[in-house]
Length: 146
Image 1: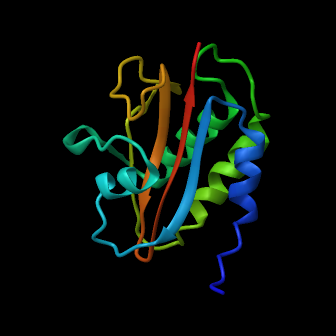
Image 2 (image 1 turned 135 degrees about the vertical axis):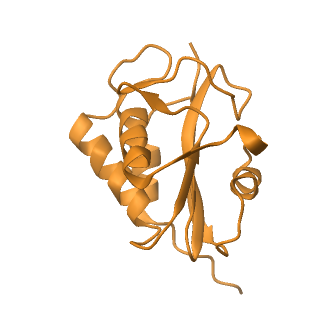
């Protein structure tokens, strides 16, 4: 009987902590030439093509920390800020210290989510980060409804 990989405890903790209509969080082995659209497709998100906005590692952590901390519809607290940042740093850390590529559909502007963006789901609100590292790719994405 084939063995199934054991779920990563960090990924499970993120899913359990972030109440939302839907949370996508996963990481898998992938070559560095994987595209952001490849990651989106594998996760079940809409590929955005040239509408992805590339962000640096620090910006990806900031975005994910806010995404986990605050509800997208009303801005209410979902996960305490220190815990949300810990989750964000842990998720980004899964891809190693080497160079990674990060992209989002909804970057931060002045510490807040940009008001206009391209949705990657059919939900009213969605945001997240797709990551492509040297050996792994992954996604942390959240969808909320009002």
